[in-house]
Length: 282
Image (cartoon, rainbow, N blue to C red):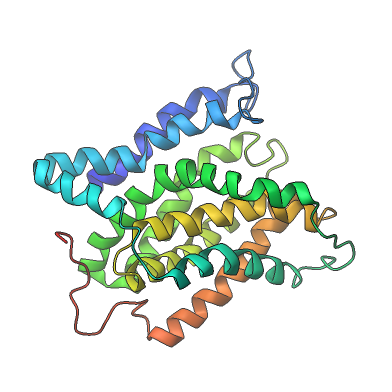
């Protein structure tokens, strides 16, 4: 686990360093990253993301379990066969919770608008992109490698409370870039982001456990959260700050769901009482 987190953080942060030092960040280096697919983050953030959790999980699995371990790991990455209700929940519950939670924020109801048709047309393509970027680059490491091993040792609840802050801290260099709106960033923003990762991580732990270890479902939920807050949410609440207010809405929404899941499962988060914590070799 130490090797995994060391690689996940080290490889990503090293790859992100030019982006942080560029004109998109601290401005130490005299260039800006060009936009690709409408954002500088495509070239500035994605390479480092792909070099992080998924690469670390691949390398450590290959080193400790060999080819057979890699085959087991890769099979879990494509475990799409779950009930249709899970796909419906991932697609529709995420935006409903995100929008509903936003109304708890001051001023959220003052300027609410219905999204234009273009948002709905772009939603599924954007969701697919998010699954292949944020979902694929992160979840094979966080939820498929780290979570099961932490669960085996500490149980699902404690494992989520360990992994959540580490997942959030992995993003910290990006708060020095336009990803988080730099230079309009204060110390409270990364702290709130880490809180959101802890709460959302509890929900994702439940998703993986309750679906029998379906990593694609965790990727889909993670991707849909990003899609809602980057595409639909700003159109519904145009007067709210895109990064900070959406972060507060995520904390409220995932926090409520996390509390419900903890109470309903008595902290087991989808794991059956008499089952092993996780079958790594399934």
